[in-house]
Structure formats: C-alpha cells, structure tokens
Image (cartoon, rainbow, N blue to C red; front, side, top):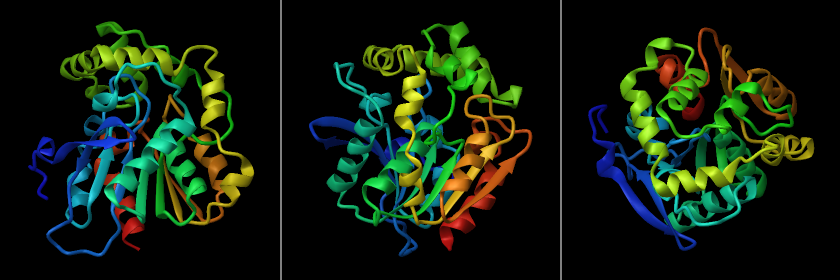
Length: 282
C-alpha cells in the first residue's frame, strides 16, 4: 500500500454481535509476508475515529501485513447512540468479537491511550492471542485521574471546546489548525456519536480510570514483549503511567520522546515508526 492510498477504499462495515462496526481493513499485503495482522486501537477523545488516529502510520504497516483498525464501540461509525454500558469489559468483548468475526486468532497490537488499556485487556483475556504489543501514551494502570484527561472527558460540543481539547493532545501548536478543530467538532456532533459520548465518562470520572486499570497480577501475567512509547510532554496521560507499567510488565521496554504530547504517531510519525517497526518485525 502506498502512502497515497485512499483509506476510505479499505473501510467497511462488519456486523459484530449485532453492532454495525466500522473497520479499516487493508487486507493481505502483496508482499506475501507471514507477519500476523496488526490491530490498531484508538483512544477516547471526542470525535475520534480509527482514521483520524491512525492515518499517518497505516500505509507503512500495510506494506508488509494486514492492518485492522476499528472504530471502537460507541465511537465514530460504530456509535449507535443507543443506551448501553461502556467500559473496559465492553470494549474488550467488542474487540474480541470483531477478531472472531474476521477469523483472526493471532495478532500484534498497537493501542493508544484508552486503546492501550484495551490492548492489555485483550492480552489478559486471551493470553495466546497477542504476539507483540505496543502501548502509546497508555492507560491500563491504577493512577489518579490526570487533569488533562479530565479535561478531555468533560468535553461539551462547541468549536471553542474542540480547540481546547486538541490543545491538550498536541504539544506542537502548529497542529492546532482551524481545519482540524472544525473536523473534530463536526465529528463530535453526529447525533449517535454525541449521545454515546455523553454516556461514557460522566463524573465522578476517577471511576473510569479505575475501570480501565488492570490489576498488578493481571499485568504480571502478560508475558508478550511490550514496547511502551510516550511523549514526555503528554498532558492527557503523563509518561509516569508508562514508567509504572514498565515495572509490572515482565518483558517491557520504554521509549520516551521529548517535545511530544499525547499524539506520538501524529506529532513524531517518523520517530514513532523508527522504534515501532523494528520491534514488530522481530
């Protein structure tokens, strides 16, 4: 897949437990590589989609393996606006059911923020599912609710709020363009997305951090190689969360990027790929 590929052309809808789920699925690579499919799990920002989160890096990985990037339950094209319970258990079940529907039983995973917690949850639920795991600005460990994350989760749709939240994600202020602010605002006001978002993280919000945290015993039991990548200047999930995960995951290593916020794969795409591609190719 070239960097000019239109990702909309490889986006489809898959029925997962009766839920129409929007998925980017690049298919098997022309190279005939035997690498397992790569599952990409986005974070919990308002208006987020797999496309918005992963657009910069999908082409690089799709050249050598199948890439699966769903809009997680309640987000983007998978949002229905129906009353439902969200949280780690629901997002984990949905991701596992998607893999079952696609007939995939062995994967590598990259999880961003909340998606990192779900990546760890998948590894805990099915120990032989994951081969290698990359966690980027990841949650998944007990910690006090960071002020920046609280600021993201209390988003109420408006242009001003969209700009404020993007300002929490991005350390590079040049990324905070009017077009990006408008795009994320418009994505957040789709009725199904808006209604799902309002149900996800109501106060008190510490409980949602707690819900996404695995126990020490669960983390100690994850034996797959894990690469932690974190922006030193992350305001949403401080890099101390990755340092704590490093102590609990048996086979782990940590790469910290200075001058980088929560959007490592967007702010520092080249640096991100330079460390992640060799790790996943091993």
